[in-house]
Image (tube, rainbow over all chains, first blue to last red; front, side, top):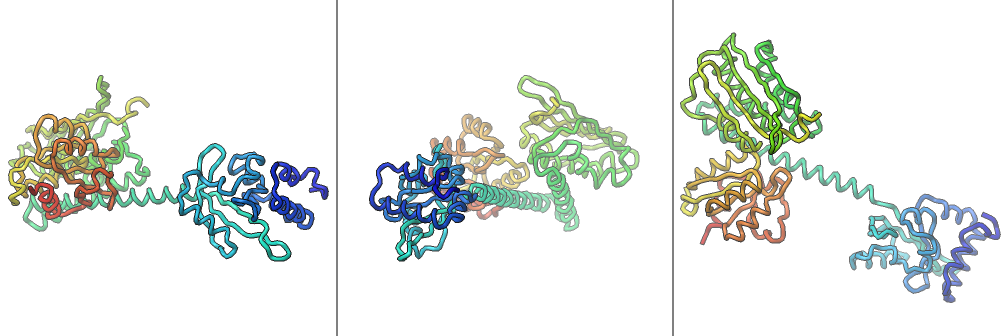
Amino acid sequence: MGRNGCTARWPCIMSAITHKSEEQKAAEGEVESLRQEGGPFVVAAEETRMPMVFMDAKGAGKPIIFANDSFLKLTGYARDELLGQRFNFLLAPDAEPGTLAGVEAAFQPSCEDSLEVPTRRKNGNAFWAALFISPVRDDSGDIVEHFASFIDLTRHKEEQAQSRMLIDELNHRVKNTLTTVQSIVAQALRNGSNPEVVREAIESRLFALSRSHDLLTRENWEGAGLRDVVDAAMKPFGVANGRSERFVVTGENVRFPPKAALALGIAFHELATNAVKYGAFSGDTGCIRIAWTIEPASAGDRLSLRWSEENGPPVTPPSQKGFGSRVIERGLGFELGGTARLDYRTDGLVCTISIPAPSGAGHE
Amino acid sequence: MNDLLCGRRVLVVEDEMLVLMNIEDMLIDLGCGSVSTAATVDQALALIETQPFDAAMLDVNLDGSSSYPVADVLAERGVPFVFSTGYGDQRLNDAYRDRPVLGKPYRNADLAEALTRVLRP
């Protein structure tokens, strides 16, 4: 900056204030002398990436007498739109009385705290900024100006909101999972009196739920493919025991949202458990075929799935319906807005499921 | 069994099948006469159109949408209801701030107490 300030901003700033009070003139004199004496410091205030404004300490409402480029960039104002404005002009119009009182207090030289204030951009949008106000004194110790720096808290606030949201979502998921566990335990106690049977029923379902959670976690809880859901549910029964050739899955890896994937995981677990206890996997010869297709329909595409067991022991329908059939026949159709039927055919159980295809399926 | 709940027709709006099964069982154990279930707002509204209910249990959040539209219709018809939520101390809409809310998971006794409270003459 030249000593005469020909290209500097200060003279422009000064001339922008058209009606100058004696105090303002005096303050400008201070700034000018500061510029003369404190050359590098003034350049620093002008050039720093920290958004800053200076206010005249004596003018009514603490009028702005300087704003650096960084501040103009942050708020979108042109310099001459700010100069001469009262300090509170920078605050959002709907700032609460508490905020205004806080700003008032921040002007006190004894105040060393920063303040979070809603700040106004030229386009009318508000953003949160951390505001620091410090006094500038003359040789005799009188406060002649204040300078204020603004730290944009937008990203910080966004991160805070994001982490709040994640915590809320996590809490929601934990509570839902606990409620699901409560139901699994209650159902097991209802359907069995032998402690060993009850324990087994609870454990196997909790592990099935846990495998579905693992699958969804690998996919960032954005959803899971139907093949993967089937694999996760069958893992402890089929592939692990070398039975994979007796277990044939045909169908695209259609992606389902997390909630539907969990429901399907529970249903496949129940079907697999039944197959191991009474059906195709209870002996050495049976096999299970799972096949699905997407079928276009006027009311939206549907996914038709068929689970069929073959070459197992002859099937007799259960005398009373247990947890598994209730989950499949009532629960699955209910939760996924479709139908699910169990057909206890003598030559093998057949389960047919018809549910709305998840959006985007079959159009890839 | 619970005298106030005995024979009552209850609507349950809940979108998770396992959770729903447990509520159904709890209500039957409490002596309720019938339990109708809905997983979505539309299903619930269709049920309310076609049959009378003495009370309802509403999960506040149904797979991303809110059950307030169901609460509005129930309130209009004078059917008492209890909310449930998995969002801890979730704040309800101003219109429903005085309604009972059960935080999930809740016990059979909590459900009985909340329903008894809204059904008490």
